[in-house]
Amino acid sequence: MTSSTAPAAPRATLSMTQVLVCGAAIVTLAMGIRHGFGLWLQPITMEREWSRETFAFAIAVQNLAWGLAGPLAGAWADRYGAFRVIVVGAILYALGLVGMALATSGLMFNATTGVLIGMAQAGTTYAVIYGVIGRNVDPSKRSWAMGVTAAAGSFGQFLMVPVENWLIGSFGWQTALFILACMALAIMPLALGLKEPSVGHAAGGPKQSIGEALREAFQYRSFQLLMAGYFVCGFQVVFIGVHLPSYLKDRGLSPDVATAALALIGLFNVIGTYAAGSLGQRMPKRYILSSIYALRSVAIVAFLLLPLTPWSVYVFASVMGVLWLSTVPPTNAVIAQIFGVRYLGMLGGFVFLSHQIGSFMGVWLGGKLFDTTGSYDVVWWIAVALGVFAAVVNLPVRETPIARPVQAAA
Image 1: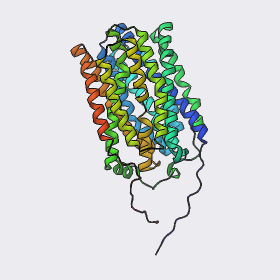
Image 2: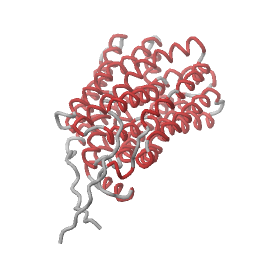
Image 3: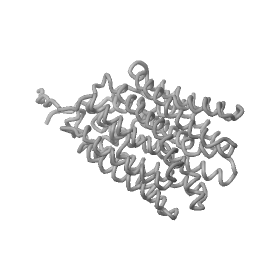
Image 4: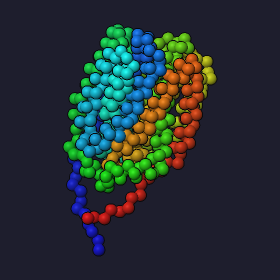
């Protein structure tokens, strides 16, 4: 006896151009603002008379809160659409930036800079935006589309870091944060462009419960390996992004060199993320990921061993820029390729949680070990070793769709 099921009703979707333009603009603002936080380390710690570990710990909490809230934001967006999540995220972002400016104690600084901004970033960045892309962009163009969106976040870093440095110099660090809070609210009207006509089970894929989807993913070896690699990604990029300005200043280079370095990372990551997304359409994504992690370790070793000059910093920043967020498109594209797009936001959020645990460790250890040893050297070499580890664990990742038992019709 055979059973048949009625064909699924056509799903209304947003146009790819609309998704890319609005999604890229949101990520540009959300990621652009956060990439400049390292510029506030010395002004805030000097005026508040805090240790560097106090500031670093709050940024570590921010990354951890972002990671913990990511799966929830992704699941909410998968179920009800991204629009509501992004609006709430924009409001939390503005409140967090105002709180960052007004905080006078480490506890308040952690609550605002750490928890509020971290939750805001979960609702305004990749897990949520990539869920919309997965549901509305043809699979044949999905990796490329994710690369475009990641490139937009990189352009936000290139654009916003000099702007933030200028705001601090022109208006003071507190007023600069108030201005950024107003800019964060501009995310809300952009969210209208991602208001989907239908979500939920119409997004395609098996009618799994959330629990079934999570058990399937966490028992799958390739998902575990992707999470391990993403931990390393978070450790490396957040340590460098937050502590590089202070590292360079401690070595006698001017703040302008650090600002230029962060901007170059953002500029060259536009190239790197777009290239990674495009290459993901043509070659195994596990090879792309493994190569990125291996090359990061090589770049850090060269940076540490060669004489430190402004030009060596610029070359290092440019190379790291190409490799910076270029892990994001292939990682999320592999998740969609293996598990489908039904729970892409949630599963992407869990992989990103691993990234943010790594971020927490990288930024906190940077501050902790500097205060203990007076140097960042130990953390640099930890980052090198972790890069080698990530290059190895990504090679066995299987990119084929997961085999599921055929579901009989009721």
